[in-house]
Each structure stands twice: as C-alpha cells, then as structure tokens.
Length: 267
Image: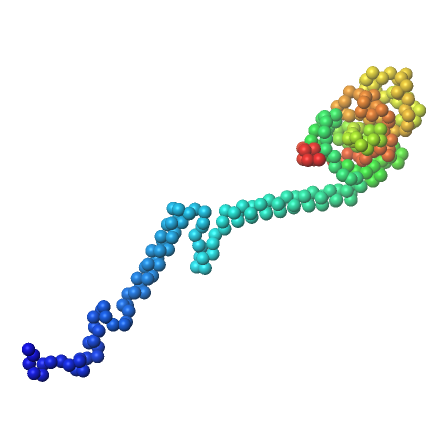
C-alpha cells in the first residue's frame, strides 16, 4: 500500500527513464562495429591459414584490390612465350648474318662445315669456313682470271692461306653439283692434253705412273689435294678430272673452329 501522493504516474516519469535497460530500446550498442571488425580479421586469418594448409594451388589475394598472384599455368605460359621469342630472334639473327655475308662474298650459302679430316691440321672437323667468290678481290698471283692462287705459285711468291701455300678452294668434283662439295688446296694448274703426273710430286700419285693414260689431262684445270691426304684427288676416287674454274664454288677465306657442328647436325 502506497501513501497518497507517493504513486508515480507514467506521465510523471522522465522521458529518458523509459527503456533504460540495455536489452530494450532501439539504439544499438556502441561496441557492435568493433565486434564485426574483429570477426572479419579472424575470418581473413582463417582463410589465409586454410590456403597455406589445404589449397596450395590457389595463391592468396595480394594488395588492397585483391589482385591475384600469377598461377603456375600463367608462369609456364610466359616461359614458353619467352622461349619461342628467343628462338625466333636467333633465327632472324642468323639469317641477317647470312645475308650480310652473301652480300660480301657473293656465294650462297656463304659458309661450309668441315665434315672430314682431309685438311687437318689446318682445318678440323666441325669447323665453319666462310667462302669468297673467286671473281671478287682477285689476288695478283691468281692464275689468269680464275681468282685462284695455286700452291706452286704461292711457294714462289710467298702467298698462302690456312697454313699452306696457295688457296684452299671449294669445288664440285667433276662438275657434279649433286654431290657434296670438296674443300681442298689447289696444287697447280694443268692445260688440256698435258701430262699432269709429270709435273706432280711423285709421292702423291699413289698407284699412278706418269706413263698412264689417266695422267693426260682431259681439260684445263686445277690439280687438288687435301693437306692431310697422301694422294692427289685426281689420283684417287675423289675426282677423276682436273677442276675447271667454273666448278669452283669459292675460296676459303676464314675459319671459325667448332661452329660448323650445328650446321652438320641440323642440315
């Protein structure tokens, strides 16, 4: 029982007293936003931990914008593109070099690879030799307008190349362009009908005798020999006739040791 005047009506209550309980009313608690931030941080950490322990194939997002790191497939594709680019660049460089050498030498291809040891020790197997057309830069010692200096003339004048007297030439044996060209030294010049064996070093005739019919030259040309061979080409199966000037592809001007290996493997 309340004394008269002690009763408090709803109207007399202060407006702020109503809903003072933290579980009632419409205003949210002040610490709700911080709780959500903490929850997001825990969630992100869980995702990162889940990536590291479970899914190694999917990299986590990087940066504020969530930019993904390159996947292994993307990296492999980039490496392949770079490899193809390097190959194309190398091929183009070789073609440009070949075109430049052709412009200078006048011979295509301007380079030959040494396949045998017939010119050792002055030219080794796998060497790459750069050629020059015989009509360009003809030496004064050359025979006529052939552009080739023989070893016989070189021995008298002091002209030499690649460790010996005279020029080393590349030629098609017996004029046959369907066979592999030969790179040997031009030893001396012979006229048609002459007995070339009578002019030759007898030590390099093999089984030939100066009286043999094979010693009579069927045409003008060069008698040739490999520096490491024991016989003239015309005294063996290398060639049966003196080398005509038109059969000469070019003269050997420069040698690059070992570089012909690539040409021999991929020709």
